[in-house]
Image (cartoon, rainbow, N blue to C red; front, side, top):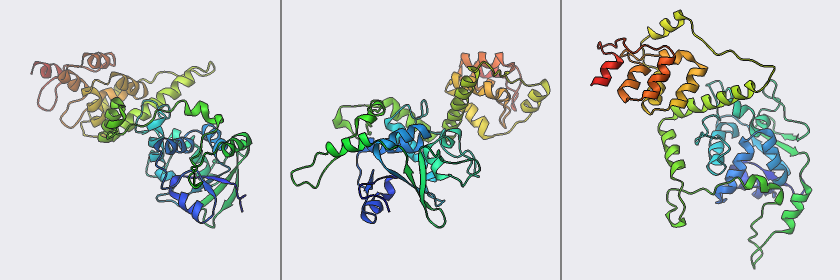
Length: 347
């Protein structure tokens, strides 16, 4: 029921069906080898509603969302965000694997970044309490019986961009291969991209060693990467809130009783593991952000009675030691084997 010249935006998985069954133009399909183009699509879907809309209105007339649960668009969306960030490094700043984008628990609660996204708002439109697509940008025009497929019409499509693409189509001699060109309306966004260099791209003369190194470090320590991402996002939110003159936020403090309760609990947890990784890698900024949000983290102790102060002395990370001392953490207490942090320094 769409016009014959309609362009459908959807994740590439459904491109062949859109073209082969519906006979409509799709933005990407399973044969789209252009990684940068797929990244742009991922950026539109997992970016904010406004950012995604500003991309979509220059590329498409409709958006198709798969919402069938299980492996639907929302379930796979963290992968979309990572692909977007591989080319558009401002997508998840300081978070190469985009751990800030995803679900925060098994009940499907979205992270703040996911909740703000173009995809989440269309996927959850009128299905989750309080979630409704902006009627000035989208109109739901089709929904299957059980809501597994939803199609939204994009309001305010750029006719200038659509006409420009048609007028600047370049085909080969046979007329069957016609690669598209991006309209000028997307220039500001496209100027931010960094062409993706894979590990095997030795013949291109380009390197992206720092990105690759951090990416694999995050894959090897996903919980640490997720914790850092959450801390960074919360820190940014607090910074924005602090800029508002009407809002004041007191720094969190612990009572002596709360400190004693945490300090006297010796157990191995995800938090003690993350703390060990932060301290032993001398990630001072990560530690400070964590303590700003949760001062009790300075008093954590693992099952052997050791905590961040022991690990800081053992790793000879003076900045970490100073940070913990400012938080009031002692350096003369004993672990399970009767060793203090200072004793580890002597070893």
